[in-house]
Length: 199
Image 1 (cartoon, rainbow, N blue to C red):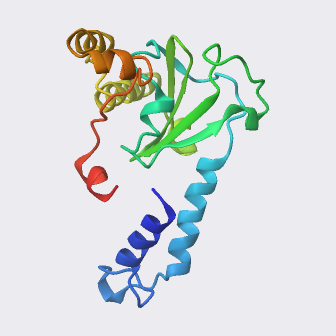
Image 2 (cartoon, rainbow, N blue to C red):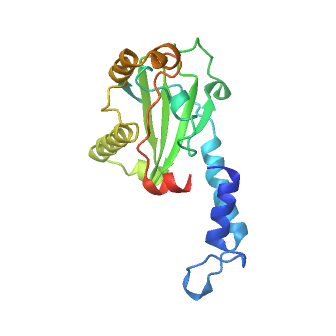
């Protein structure tokens, strides 16, 4: 979400009077408080991860099936934020050997964090500290399952992209010569309809 979009959303929610609309009694929260909340959220998301791969689950998935660098920067979604892992003091490796970036996405009750190397997708979900501390083993397993199910649906991982690319390349010489290798791993995202509209 870009700054102009945030400004537009803030204007619609808060209005020109500076009060939150829709609160009984006229509301007493002002635009500066709303701005403070937005600033706090982006500050939290901007903090670099200091743990190498702690807490990440691994999903075997070649980069030809999903390229985060390509898909999340191609203009489909504007809510993902990319952080170079070098900012967190982690040594940079050769491209594809180790993850070079972490991608983060605020999703309802959790923040999704993704990393990728040439053969795997690494994922984890972050929750508020009080909820994480109160999480039983069965709750944690359930949350991991929910996160994985969301990822599979959002990126449409049931679709075999390599098979599709091979099929299209056999049928179209232009695709084979100019698109197939250059745009490997690009998928259509299955976004929430509201997110898609306001993007």
